Image (cartoon, rainbow over all chains, first blue to last red; front, side, top):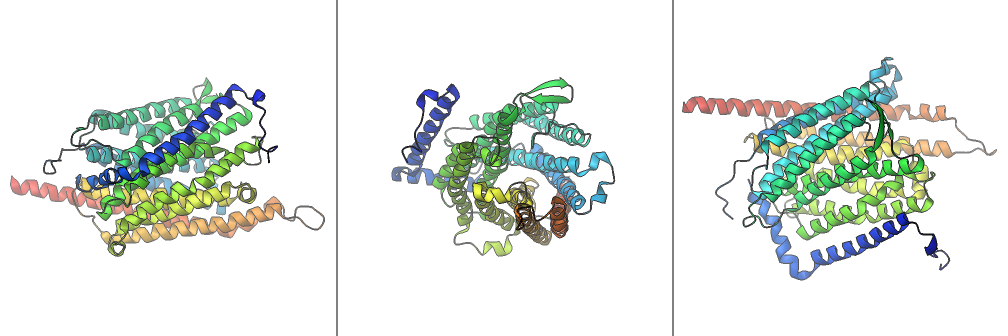
Length: 57
Length: 476
């Protein structure tokens, strides 16, 4: 298993690093977004939004 | 919020785009049905270069995706952004310029493709002058949408409703994807060569190609869903928080999927694996979104018996769920080895295009026509008739392509006891004939439904206009 995940870091090109950084940033971005949307203290505030379009016209 | 005073919205351009979208739906499905018939009966090519299958199929995809789909997205975005933000369009003039130029541009796209002018890049066949023009028009559309949101009264509308997020995500993603994939070196007015070469070109092409599906045909139409399902059902969306999760998961996830179109090619193996893994992960947010829309009807399912427009909207979500399950399964390498290059892919695309995109658009367009002309539809029975034509037509189409595609894949990989291919390619083509006929019948049913819709909408508008004129005359 360790052999499978072994990475030759010295062989990483600029493109590889850019891709890796974006991937990790996206992962944490998703974690933060999901935490912000799902925390119980935000529930009432967020769910109130859904009623606003019902009488918009 | 003061709910008694409503702003006078800029609805003229929305009316134009809505009628334009329905017209292009009729034209696009006619082209598709004729192209399907050409595969069943090749004599229908008539040896006329401009309408041979190779060109007609691309004219069909451009008409249904960009003309019908694009005009639907413009109509619904301009309609909903005003209402959800309680404000007129930032620039009505710019909206009209956008709508007119978009129409002219797309007509030129179809004409140039019929004349054989093409980049050869799927869903990006427009040669460079038209591609630049379309990108500029798309930028005007995006700018107007963003500025309309920005010009809202922040006290009465402090937050931006989630449908606008989906529309905006779609606009931004499509802009950079379309521009990057279109980078090319022109050698004449209607001939250019891609800036990228070899496997890089293929990767960029499918990075755009799958995201044309993921953003143009999914995110944008989810914007439609998140506004029109609650409005037609007269109930709030099931969970606003789920819609937020759905949005960000789509925005973060979709851009990774393109490589699953290039399994078993010169592309590095890990790239295809990554595309397949993220594709499978995307089932979760996609189904979450589909359930969010469907569960909006919780406790009011009986509405489906009487509200034919709601039927279009809800069945579109069933097809959305089905297509977003089938796609990831087909992205997995083992299944892809059987399905790729076969009619199964064509069937999958159409379960999304007919079942999801067209059905949700049709529901939204019927809803808008009644609101924009302030009237009931000319015939509700015709909407019901249209619903069944569209549903049966879609099922005919995708079942035919499932059977034909799996049969193709199995015939191509079959070996006899000596290790040689069991069937010639021509034998596999001959075996497809009954299914190509069945697909044509499905397309014909769907096209007939579009004609019924156009007739119903024209009669609705004529009736509404006549009533308005009679009212004016009575008051004079």
